[in-house]
Structures are given as C-alpha cells and as structure tokens.
Length: 44
Length: 157
Image 1 (cartoon, rainbow over the protein chains, first blue to last red):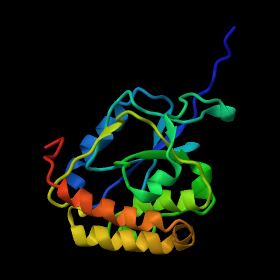
Image 2 (image 1 turned 90 degrees about the vertical axis):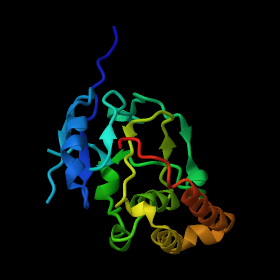
Image 3 (image 1 turned 90 degrees about the horizontal axis):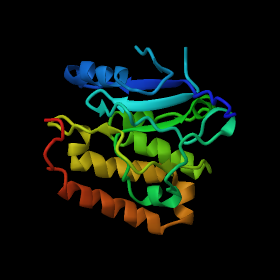
Image 4 (image 1 turned 135 degrees about the horizontal axis):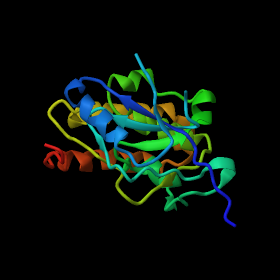
C-alpha cells in the first residue's frame, strides 16, 4: 500500500517593475499551473 | 496563507503549466530529485534564467534581496550567490519551467548596469570570492559574453 505523500503548499510571488502590460498574462499562466496546492502571495 | 515554498516569476514572464518542480517535499521526501548540484558553478556564471523556488525558511532566516541591486539588475542572482556563500545547497532542474520575455525595457539589456551589478555582487560576497578568486574573472567574463547574445529575439514577442 503506497502512502499518500502530501505535496507542499507553494506561494507564487510575481514581481512587477515597469511590467504592468504583461502582468495579467503572468498571473494567468500561474493560474493554469497543474501543480496543487498553490497560492498567490499578495503584495503592495 | 503562505506556502512552505516560494516560487518567483517576473511579471513579464510566463509559466509553463506542468513544470512546477520542487526538489524535496513534505518531511524530506524527494518528490522530484534534483537534476544536479550546481554549487560553485553558479558563482562563476549566471546561467539561471528568470525563475527559481526556495524554502520559506530561508526567507524567515533573514535572507533578502539587495536594495541596491533592486534598482540596478541582478538582485535575484545575488540572492542565490549569497545563499551559496552561506553554505546552502542549490540544485538545477534540467528542464524549462517558464518563458522569458526580453524586451526594450529589460534591465539586463544595459551592459553598464550588468557590469556594475556583477562588481557589487562580488563585493557583497567578497569573503567567499576572495577564497575562490578564479570565479571573479569567470563571472565578469560571462557578463561580457552575455552582452553578445543580448539581441536574441524575444521568445514571447
């Protein structure tokens, strides 16, 4: 019987400096990730 | 909620959806064994592009990006160099995990900034580099080489 290995939660940090016009595309690519669990790290 | 791992990506990049790699999972179980220990090689050349993943414990341990390099370029490389100089292990996963977009306002398009950041990186990890002086010249040479390939067309347009 194989033990179920719990995968670690990953925070994805999207850094942005003068890159606003590509930000939505980057966030979208994170949301499409097949890895789970994953969470967004809110910034300022 | 904050994960036990941090994965970095710049806003001008793009993830490949099925390529999240973590070199070690819950309770030390190796979910994806690392392709190779990069160790000293990273101190000589910045061959890593755009993304990496590291344990939250490193951040809680006080490791931070350089405020000076944040305004220049190379703060992510410096972050890894400092971790290596402190004895942390760095591994390379030999497969692409994201796209890198090179464009007109990319900070690494500026050779002067790149050279200056290299000098500062070496200076800030001086205690390690002075024990391994051959990596100083290698690091600066690689910087020059990269300037020759800086005009490669953008992957994402």
